[in-house]
Image (cartoon, rainbow, N blue to C red; front, top):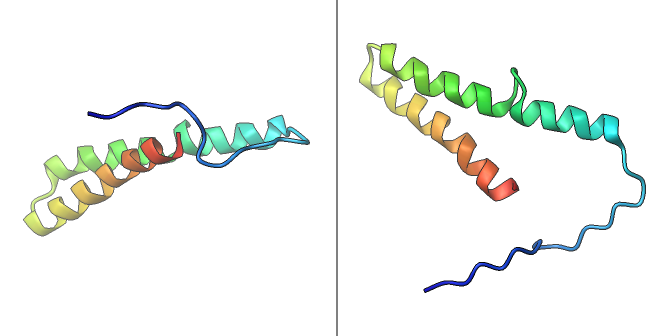
Length: 73
């Protein structure tokens, strides 16, 4: 059994919020040219790949990015 505690690993104190920089960071993670979109492209390309060795690489790269989001958020 486990217990879920919703708390940050390290305390965060934002003294000077920068909405412009926050917008850039969010767009890199989830925008059209962001990491999540690239991950989906890798996973979709694996179905048309004729070489089995490359299919494994596309799968590994495509599934690695969403696991990063689990850690970040």
